[in-house]
Length: 94
Image 1 (cartoon, helix red, strand yellow):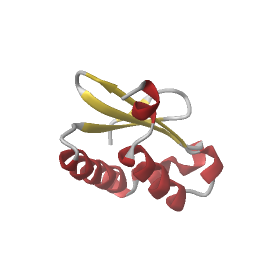
Image 2 (image 1 turned 90 degrees about the vertical axis):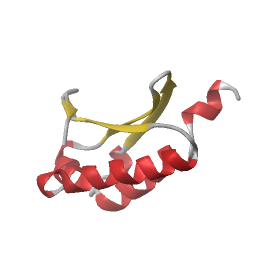
Image 3 (image 1 turned 120 degrees about the vertical axis):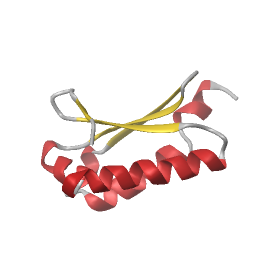
Image 4 (image 1 turned 30 degrees about the vertical axis):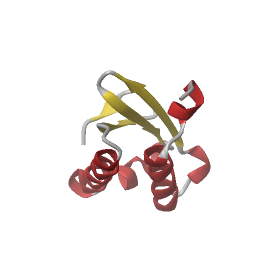
């Protein structure tokens, strides 16, 4: 496997597809994937006006995305984590 294989994957594509369906500004959705000794990290950036939609009421949408990513990861024997980054660069812990 080369570096290009790590940049994309079913987990990254899943997050990008789902989030683009939820938000008002799909062109501003940015999803990156990195792999290290801890597993796979999916980093999500969206337009500031779409943060509420991605996080959801009481963090339920973000939690659901994380649960589904765990299912995808377990199918591929990988630990998959989702980090949602606010437009100002801070991380959302929802």
